[in-house]
Image (cartoon, rainbow, N blue to C red; front, top):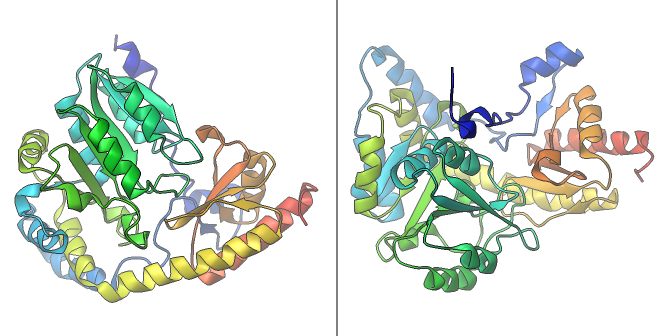
Length: 366
């Protein structure tokens, strides 16, 4: 069976190793997973309670319009429900944008390293990926602006960036927008937006009513702890939202995900606890890691990018045998870096001890 070359050459997205697989393959007990930037506290108690209430009604189709969740999001972000599109995770919003705006031969700009799904969705559509290397571990807006031409349809900017955790300065972003031609969409992916302190970087919701060309993506997978339910949303001009709604599958966000997201949104205490743990542990871990001779990039997320000054794949394997799942960044073009989720204090202590032992095993530790 013949398929286009841009499909046959696709490389599947590499998911993190599941805990169950690690237990089975390596025979370790009580492993911890610090590879996928998940919330270590788990879902909000309110979300868990809401899920229990909806279970008896799962023979009914979900609310296809997402009315209650959209209404709550509109109130929180000070937009209208018409500015919001719901997705099966924010990944699905990326798919919507590419399907609506990209045709074979069109160009889409993203950065490297960055979230791998941008390039994969563009390739699936037969588009051309124009990939701009990060400068100083953050988006090179000047180089991106220079790469724009008449074929450019979308620009993806994950802010904060994954895997570096860096953010775009607000003034630079404003100047960047001014440099772009009309009709070109800039997608701000704010999957980790809740973790950002201060007002020094652009917030996508600010552009909904004054910049038709800015689309913002958000998710309940990270700070809200609902990664397993897959629910995300986009904030955008109503005309753009209307186009995305045309390609959205009916009932794309299931009933459990909708009620859980709605309840999680209301549980401010759980979110605050998540953020405080992340911010406090980031400070402590940075000090510990630097004491081991590692370099730690400043992060505005719930993960840390760490230079270990040796082959990350080797450390990854050693850590697996110690029951700690991390992410080696070799496939991102960073062969001596690892990325780890900031977990609970006990998990972080275990990671630090395991890393110290692994580095000593290789002769590079302190």
